[in-house]
Length: 177
Image (spheres, rainbow, N blue to C red):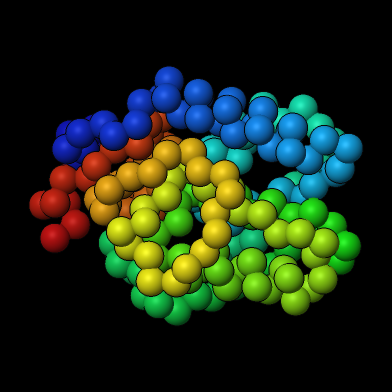
């Protein structure tokens, strides 16, 4: 599996620093509040788990499973496979996503939660890929901005593989071309 990786883009240690920094900042920004973290499955899992270890305020967690990718490309069609079970009316919601690329999914989910009368909807992502953006979306908490590369690891996959790598790596072109 590691032979399929062209290079490591973000190391395990850098990911630990990212989740520590973001957890501390969110804790400061939401002090006195009890936000609901909504993880977008499946890719958010390692990031959200490590992020929460660094959040020092009371909070709740829920998950939403959405699908938009086929192989290495966004299909442009977003499907909600499993919705949240938490009532978010009047709540401070933090959407946690592994990567914001086109912005379509994040924007759609943010608008959906606003329609459900959340008090606030904030976006936190591990990786931001602004070169891929086709929809403008305001991401408040960004772990790292990356170039327009296809990356895997730490929750990110290619056809459900590589999620278990402890780092973010660039997948070799011959693997998915």
